Image (cartoon, rainbow, N blue to C red; front, side, top):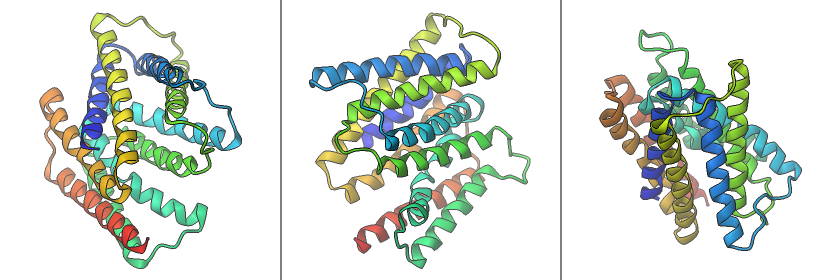
Length: 275
């Protein structure tokens, strides 16, 4: 799980770096196409169909994931890597709250309190009334909400759909999101230069490796034990943001990140105890 989170942070860093050479829409299209092809080869090597049959549940999941990938990619392109990654850590909290509304799950007052504390952490990172606020931060917030919705919708996906097929579907959605961004900019995709192409390829390779490691972690370990290590992604992201992009987190961001991670770990612990 730790290696998976490191790879996901590397994927985000390569993606952000690629947007300095190529428009975000083009990066999303290239990343999505390469990733879909790699997952398709993975599925074929296992004797699986590359693309699953699109059921109603998968269609809903894909539509929600389209929003998540669209806004998260824009957040990476226009805001800091560390800030975007910090806001993403609130996804499990939103998933828990959403499970109450969508699936009627029961959540005690302690977990509701933890969710509230985590959302306060998000507000500290965003600083909506301070000089550090950037309108583009809203992209990160919408991306996080989209990913939370995708995780909830995953429960509606048929169990017969394999991880490689979900990977093909997810990367195809990313490419489609790139088409949407490119169309909104009223321009055609550009051919990336050598450096831009290598960074897009790096993002795709890190993304596929990260997904494979994540699948291995979830299948070979106890879920309640390995899941908290998802938060190591923030540590890797902050290090890469500092080394690669010169981003230095301030006290507000570190405090907000601590509240988000702490409340998330508490929520996971309470969920395990309830189970």
